[in-house]
Amino acid sequence: MRTTAEQLSDVLDHWQTGTGPLYVQLANAIISLAEAGSLEHGTRMPSERALAEHLHLSRNTVTAAYQRLRDANWLEVRAGAAPTLGVSSRGVLGLSPQERFAQILTGQNEPLVAFNTASPPPAPLVTKALNDPVGFLGGAPIQGNGYAALGHRDLVLAVTAHLRRQGIDAKPEEVVITSGAQQAIWLVVTMLATAKRPVALESVTYPGVFDAVHASGSRPLALPMNEDGLDVAASLKLLRAARPDVAYLTTFHNPTGTAISDEDARVLLEAAAALGTTVVDDRTIGELSIDGVRRTPFAAMDTGASVITIGGTSKVFWGGLRIGWLHTNATLAAQLRHRRAAMDLGSPSLFQRVAAKLLAEHYDETLAWRLAQLRESLDAVEESVAEHGLSWQYQRPLGGPALWVRLPEGGAAKFAERAAQAGAPVAAGPAFEVLPGVGANHFRLPFYLPPEEMRLGVKILAERAA
Image (cartoon, rainbow, N blue to C red; front, side, top):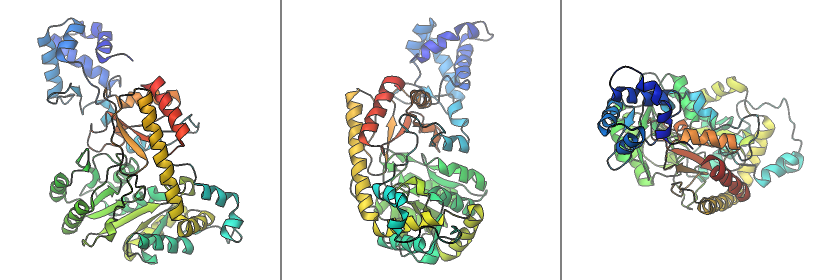
């Protein structure tokens, strides 16, 4: 892999024959590489001394060029750290909501190891149910016209009971069945968000929410995060200043695997109640507790906040069922239920009935099996990273199915390109970022696959993408 200084050497002839001072021409050369995509946001730049020596220029020339780039937001400099390519670069500004979401989808050709999507293979009980639906359901799998546009009654009752077991005082009329949690997010955000106020999101978040924010006419407001997760104190200041219509939060954060404490969640919810902000609690991965600690759903906390809870079967059972749900007040639920039915007439009745039985009778055992698989696969990843001597940096997640990996040398977008070419695609950090730059050095690495596939995937990344 060629260094930044070597790439700049390639354009040396172009900017040396231009007009203006050398420092202006050098700055323009760096900008041209960034605009062409050769240098991505977050790329670590050479030190002033190193670049001056490599290009045979005076250090004053490089210092002046870097200062020009800093003034135009093309370069970021932090004390004690190498300068990095800043927020004006192509990587941050060039991603549309659709391009973000596309990075977490598997294409028509299945790769060797699909690391870009965080969806699991089916649990054994799902395979059994779909191989023998008559035996699993105890009767004819095909009934009526196959539609359950407003939600099959068995599934609505199963979801209601599931929410009540989690501590949420749910009623059947408050539950909306959706085609996966993704549709639930889209329905809620596009119904409640407006162009007048922003939608508050964690500064890195699930890419599927961006299209909903865009479709609503609103804009994202980045809530700051640190290495332990959401910075609640700083987020409270932003919420009080912006007074957003909606705040979209995750139980176990996607993609970092951090979690907000119950105490901090209460503080945040009480502030939202005072501001009139609706909080969307996305619990799609909320039960995947790697550390074994259960986190209380926001709707189970008596804070006075308006909370909409989102969940689904995809992360515990199988994404192919396309069964999700949301819980809210009965009035809004009725509106969303009919709006949702008008979109696609709902998931097939057969799948809703299968999901109902899985959720009502086999949830706990399947969750325990899934968590055991996740922990085993995570161990395999960590062993493989050590075996291949990779300098990846990450924190072991408290929950969820993915690692948020930092590349010390930056350039996650280019790393993702090489990973895709090698047959082990990953989703680069910019697809997740709300605050420009916070994901530039990162990529998400799901560990849903069996240990042997995880080891193969890490080996491919180590040998062909690193």
